[in-house]
Length: 628
Image 1 (cartoon, rainbow, N blue to C red):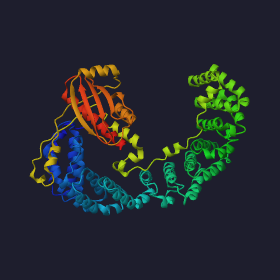
Image 2 (image 1 turned 180 degrees about the vertical axis):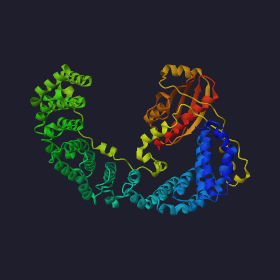
Image 3 (image 1 turned 90 degrees about the horizontal axis):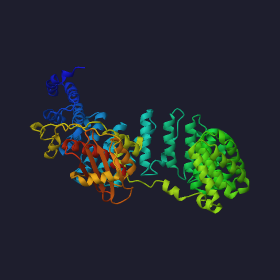
Image 4 (image 1 turned 30 degrees about the horizontal axis):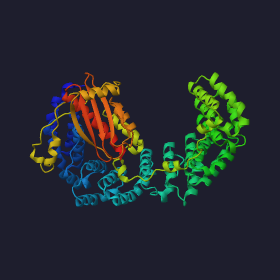
């Protein structure tokens, strides 16, 4: 609203930073960040940055925290505020003076510091030990993350920390704040991935209250599934059984699916409960039970007979697509054990013209052909009618093609049909694959106390990868530190971080510009190397996630190796609005190494190249954690 006001702000703000009143200094520090934000892409004043660094020694704790936040905002494009040894030790000594918000902020900033010796590491951990018992959940979570990250080479220390944080997490899970409760439950599930029995003795804490919203109840049910053992299985199943008749359809079906998951270990008890629920003749309950049965017989073939005995009379109560598909699959795969299976499928065939869901029709085709192989006399006529309808009258091309496929397959002979369709009806080994092995704490320690456990790893990677996808990128700069007052807090190694490079201009990448593999190869061979760098990488590669994240910032994938291939390679292309091409090769020789990045440019534009590399580095950094 006042474009020219910036030139009048600097002097009052500098005076405010030196004011005797702490309240004025607090406001002035925040004003510095606001002023530089208003200035946009102009250079950062190095003297102002140095002044803020010197204020980290201010007597007022709120001024200290405000300085950290202001420096983080001002130096965001350069990686944020520098935390070296003098600054880290100074902040550690000021922790007791800070309020809870300030403590959680400082603990987060301390993640950037790496102790230089084992003795220093344990001195820091001992100093912060008391914050694991703080009354503030945010302080406890921040302290826990700092412990987990610093003690990455000491698994026994990490395990001890997670035992000590159990109490605060359980308290947060029963908090009246729904947001806090949900976030705590997500972190509990994250911990259970590494320590499966960690909360088993406190399973009753995860029983649902009537007044809780359904999203919290669903999270609690997920946790309960992971806490089941021989001692509490009966109590957990009784609790889940009560949720199955909840007025919320989503919650009731979630409880049924939870019982179905537990049935992989405690089959007989769970099948009995699920069969009993069928007697209620409620549409959504019957549908969920049949879906649970479908998954269960695939993973636990020993329960097939009990499931088949429970199927008769289910068809009348199911109206949704997923429920119909599950029932039809069961009748097709195990119809020889269900006396009325052909007659149930015949009813579906008679109503096929009014069926709204193409997926149900395709499932019906497959099931009826499979049942025809075991009970041909009862299925021949209805199979002919169904094939005729699908080929001659059906408007959906996917259903029509499926009908033609089975018609031609049947013409080739019964033995050929059996060879194609008579695949195994169950695979218990898949249950072992679905049960996740225990993950080391280090694979998720850096994600603790973030939104990653709430969103999920892959979704969070996509969310964060979208952040750099702005049409322009710019870097600002400041001068070397020359203020003698800050020498005690800023070491020689950190001064270069305070140097910010001049503005490199902007870069706009054009979406939907594709090169063929031949065009890429021809252009690549004709160009000289513009830049080569190494990016830190840990663990395996997730090609789909990388490709999606790159696409968000308009970097196209020409070719990419599959996951697990060594060496792993990827070839990328991008084009800016001036027509300059950026061709990139990614090379990862082996897991847990550095990724080599080679970039070639069709035109010599150093500024644009630097900005492109910055964007690429940001995207790859966002998805690198998925491999750990």
